[in-house]
Amino acid sequence: MNTKPKRFDRNLVVIGAGSAGLVSALVAAELGASVTLAEAGTMGGDCLNTGCVPSKALIHAAHLVHAAHQAASMGLLPTPGPADTRAAFAHLRSAIQVVAPHDSAERFRALGVDVRHGHARILSPHEVDIGGDVLTTRAIIVASGAAPSVPDLPGLSDVAPLTSETLWHLEEAPRRLLILGGGPIGSELAQAFARLGSSVTLIQRGPRLLEREEEEASALARSVLERDGVRVLTGHHAVAARIAGGERQMIVRHAGGENILGFDRVLVATGRKARTTGFGLAELGVALRSDGTIATSPWLETSVPGIYACGDVAGPWQFTHAAGHQGWHAAVNALFRPFHRIRPDRAIMPAVTYLAPEIGRAGMSERALREQGTAYEATFHDLAELDRAIADDAREGFVKVLTARGKDRILGVTIAAPRAGEMLGQVVLAMQNGLGLKSLLSLVHAYPTYTEATRDAGGQWRRRHVPGWAPGLMRAFHHWRRG
Image (tube, rainbow, N blue to C red; front, side, top):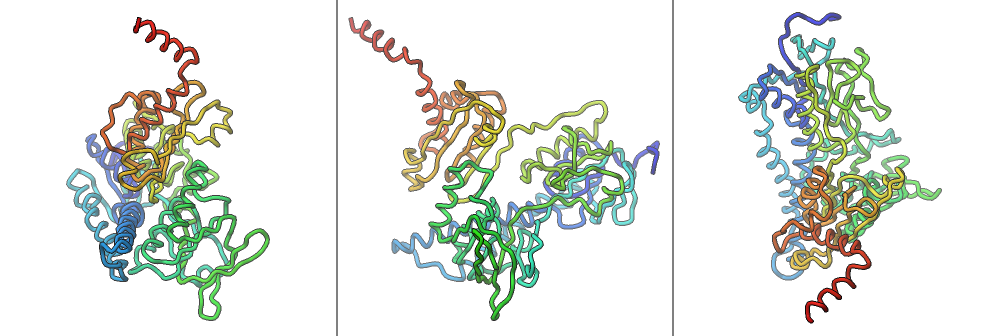
């Protein structure tokens, strides 16, 4: 269709029922629009079925098994066995079933969304074919997500690699697990499987784990993984897989030499790539970025007017909360174009790696600030002195806040603590509203809580910025008051 139709079947068609698509469709329905949501796979997308929900359920179960082992070593509980490991995988499937109704087609139909199960293909900026049924629409949102990126490694297919999509079909933890990739997914699952009893080897091509995090966070991640029994091999990269003598093996290269690592299962966690093929985007000339994501304007519109993109397929983040944030803005902009549009805030996006302890961050890192030439200072507060951490025997962690040189304006924060994800919220709120680090110091925190650590960081900053003349003046004042 080369011309815009005079009448449309829908105000909006959304492709993909993951986090971004579900939010987009729901917002459109709540605003009174006629909206169709198309999904070829399972409602809920990666987050529900192969991402956040199963991974966090497995991590939770692994932590319980680990705690049971600790209790057994104290003679408080019997030692966990294979049945406990199998129960961990049963728990993650149960979690998916419990959460699934929240994202179900039935729920969204009841909320006013026309949900279609079928593959969607964009024929023009105003036509979408869904399983052979062509709908005309005023606007389109592509929220097709991302898929695991599997390297083109010789012999890899012969050893039946697992990915973040296929991992959840396991019934129990493998005896020897090899993980390729030391980012958040690889690191989280390395700790989880080690706590479930697997002998885990983690291969990271770069010099450190969690390369996007502050160096202190990367060092802490390595320390806690190795303490849980994970063999961490940084500066290594896999060159080939094979089966030799009935054993699955990976050939890895390090410092010019090669080693052979035996394993029972291998998990590929080397990143994710946007799902952009099969939707008619190339035929319409929708532009992609160099990393394969759909290029969008600051208002999430693609190079083809009337077609928007949000979530993992658009980037730059691959977080469920980022997808939902973008989905809301994409729906509003698509529905009210050209009369009104809202630019999503791209400056402050929290991220959490769910290790024990958790590692959360928001804003800029030291490396990014140095590259920008921005003058800054760092305030570092060790969790070891926090009363709640002492009471919980969880003193490993820290709060690191980056502020503008000589000011308390927060540029970035990293928190490593048992509840870093929850602690991060108040700092992000302060950053979002232009409140400085001193605002966290003035906030009354319940005692004893982990959030007191952010208050203490504010106290450290204030003490460091007391004017040199102030202490002497105060002593003189109080001397005068004593007569």
